Image (tube, rainbow, N blue to C red; front, side, top):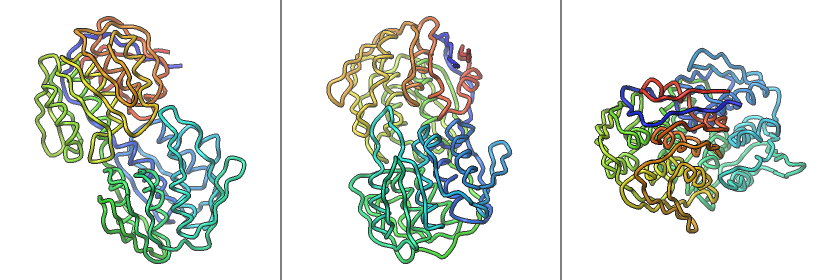
Length: 416
């Protein structure tokens, strides 16, 4: 099993390219199930989760031609309408095959996702919405069995804002009969990216980027070309690393317009942040100042950035309060950060972080994707050598992180 060995204390300097967004790429790959035409995608990140999704879709008969960060999908020969448990259990985003299969083929059998370290994340909103569109759904032996001769457009109001729920229902509605209105829809940039691809494929969608989207169903969708947006979470991870370690780094191939809340917090922490159209330069010459925040849906502070900012707060001047409102178990990195000398206490849904002058290296273990990123940041800032175990979590969502950090001057290597 691979681990990361990090010798902390180095300032970070140089340029780093940001890869395509994992949370956009996964639903966009599933959109290939909606048409028999060629869907050509660029800026696809090289991630474990993307490889798992490709394996799942290929098993269904979706043909793929991969070349570097580009892939051409062709769904003209789909011959399996099932997403089996052995693949779904490793990646909850596999549920995104349900809507497209049901809408195009009238049938789908998708395993219920397994447990998740950071929270329950139930799929009941997906099921509720598809049932409202006329699908017959029953759950048997751990699988969702769905049938619908033809989905019918309707008004769907989800009980909560759900990103994957919005994406699943959006894809299903593109081929439904009549008009579908999605109320309380997620507004995340990754949802917008999916919607933009669907429009390029011939879907009729209005209200993109708002909490109320209207979809006029069409008989069929066609092929299209699409460039996946860059990963704002990866970008912020590198920015937090510079804020914690000090240095001067330019983030390339990014989307400044969808990162306002994070950039404001970095400036509050004392970083000099200079934004261009598709790049961000961050300069940090002193110890950061503590910043407090509360996670919430877009355009608020993203839960996927919480752990990285907490790592920065560990060595900040002052005390910060970090409140998590999205996932009930998303403080598992706290005990690992405390092993490095951080002073963090948890009170309900809030972590109280008292900044310390320095962190000291120790063996730590990643518990989930973003927790692993926070441990990398803390290890980069710590004195001594830190060994991070279970970095397969990191590989799920970060494209060759140790290579990118190494190019910035970090002392980091992958060891087996």
